[in-house]
Image (cartoon, rainbow, N blue to C red; front, side, top):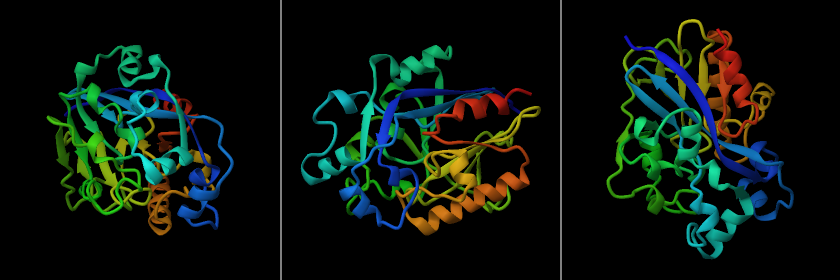
Length: 283
């Protein structure tokens, strides 16, 4: 039986988004995307690093610095204009995935597995820096890569299907690994320490990972299911995604929190994720 030795968080820059992005209003998504005039304060673009006896795991990989230096990174035309309208990123040279791993004492070659919460570019941007890793993705999320309107929904196949990448679709089993109310799960190492569950809504195949170790509070890495613990606790859901699914997945995480007392929810863009992580692992 393996053990989680360490959990860390790193940032690959900062991003401003529309306020409607992080908290839904009455406006349909396409309406606020086209008309919103305000920006949030800069939010971190974060990935999580989990050191397990059986390998070093990343949950998401942050955003590629090329997205702010290469004019051809995003699509052109109307689709590209929508990308520019919905997010403004700042990624300094020292805020790459490689640099973040080094600050935590790791090399990119140490990474054995990457779990992708969903396929938006600010979560898959560092994949080129860990070419040796196997990459786990929800089957419903993988099905969106070539779906109609994929680029408009934030899925850019050319940055996902690079040659040589070892994509694997998660094969959920019929048990929830004690993570009620989730009825299906995937135990990454077969020891209950890192378990994947489906949390669709932000995208059709969004997933989360529950991390457990004796002496620590349990943790749920939730990607973009929420943008802060406070918003989740208040019953707010993001404005980007399918509202009914976001509500159901959020309710499931809140129910899990009741069933796992002290569960720390760690979101990709929560400025306080590092604080929540520190408290959970304080022992």
